[in-house]
Amino acid sequence: MMHAVPPRPSLITHSADFLREALLRGDWAGNLPSERTLCLRLRISRPTLRAVLAQLEREGLISAVENKKRRILAVPAAMPASRPTSIVLLTPVAAQLMPPFVLFWLDALRVLLSEAGYSLEVHASAPCFSAKPAAALEKLARRTPAAAWVLFRSTAVMQRWFVEHRLPAVIAGSCAEGVGLPSVDIDYRAACRHAAVMLRQKGHRRIALLLPDSSHGGDAESEHGFREAFAGVADVTPLVLRHEETVVRLVACLEEVLRGKPRPGAFLVARSSHALTVITHLLRAGYRLPRDFAVVSRDDDAFLDHVVPQVTRYAADPARFAKRLAKLVLELAQSGRTTLAPVRLMPDLRRGETG
Image 1: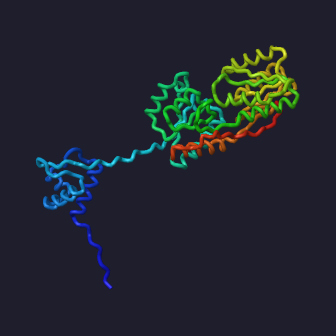
Image 2 (image 1 turned 135 degrees about the horizontal axis):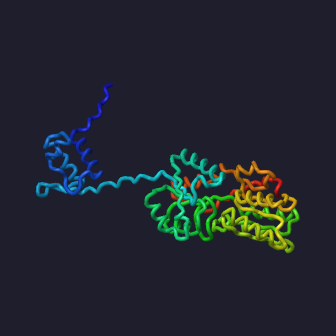
Image 3 (image 1 turned 60 degrees about the vertical axis):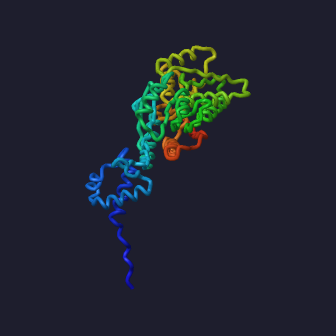
């Protein structure tokens, strides 16, 4: 049995397809080129070209001849905009000034995003973290197209700016009050509540929480959890001490409280580097830990493994942090939507010799 051979497309069909695609791409504006120009480009005769043009005229893509010209009626198809493939992490400090824990989850995040086809760009910009960051943020957003933004140590003003401008952003930390952005953070509220209860149960009656004088959401959550541990407890005095984030100011704050009467018997310290400053200052002053003072670090970093006496602290897994952060970032970059429910990771207590 002989099979029928499918008919080959005619030269007119081929030429019409070519011109149709060119018109919809917007290769020409206003009028079609002359018949001579089109014949040379398509390598067809003038009768064949006129048959092609008649077909495109019937399709409504071009007009009939008017003053020896044909107007283009086709609307060029919008070219699909190339989607950004960069995730931009915005930070107030350069990478070399970041704590080791942050560097660990940052590297893990970069790998996870790369596996999904996205690159991670880190932008350190102090002006974006100022009291009036709008101009700096607008300039950065214009010159840096991003599929999504990750805001590290962000201020309330910054967070509200991203909400108002509807830019896709995830907070690596906690949201300010009233800000609806997805976020991933350590559960500082639960950790500080747990630490305060633990110190209280060890017999301490005057317990101090040392916090940086900042507006970071995680520090605010730390204070909430710390105070919750003393609700309804009459015989324990909680203190919240704020300091500027320098060694000199932290030591001055510590010296002032040590001169007071009665002085605290236990310190819960935010930031692992600040906990190290508190411990070494107390040891330098001749105090013994935990006989004279108990010190607990709210945070953990690898360098604390090399400190003696062994530091009591709360440790979170940077790989787990990066995984939860990457999940939100990729959902936002790929679909424009993600959960707004805060993701909070409870750290583990690592018992040491200081608390």
